[in-house]
Length: 275
Image 1 (cartoon, one colour):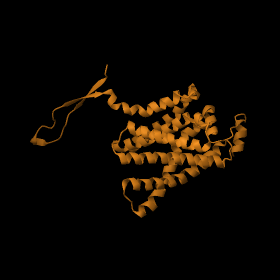
Image 2 (cartoon, rainbow, N blue to C red):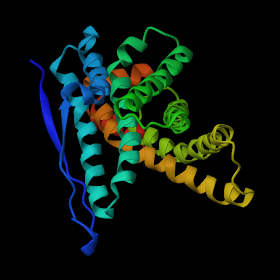
Image 3 (cartoon, one colour):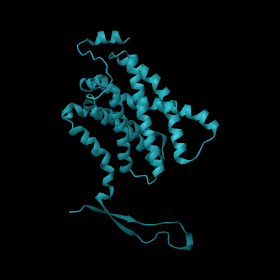
Image 4 (cartoon, rainbow, N blue to C red):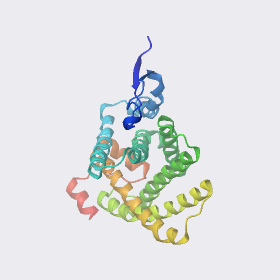
């Protein structure tokens, strides 16, 4: 049986005395598979949960806690600033791609452990690229150039996060020190954001064949990059809280960043060492 629905479209316009205000209704038969592509990105998320054997545990579902927190706060934010539907759709696509990339990245982190750090880095970037492409397919924009820019933008977001996390872990000297890690992370995010934003602007200029005024580039791009880096820090914060508070994901976090985990150390001793 094919599931269908009917969409009734009635054109209307205030013509005054010139004619009727409503036209003849048109009925459009909508089949379920017309919007099936909207489920592609969620299908990828489901596969990331059930395919790896290391994820076949109930505790893995806790990764949806930070995902839900971010999406809920984003809904409140859109309501608070009264964002238009067109603006909301674009930002929804960006945020959804980023947070689902983070979820899939931590779901596949156990499989990445078998590779070297260099390979793990590119596998992580590949996750951001693949998820972004799937999200574009799910929410087809109809503009090829804009879609390419979106992919570049989301990959740049992944680069900001990954480079900042790698730098923070290096300055923690290979030890699991949550407070110090988050402090270094908030310092590196804006720096990486500025560098990544400059790269995004250069790629956008090449794709769109347009060059903004030099004054705009020098005055606005660094500020936008700084704010963008801090925004990524805020969006990533609920995931970091999960990494530090949940033993299952803490193990993956330490393994991915080559941090020496100390589960046997008491919390009071760990806090002293972190200060």
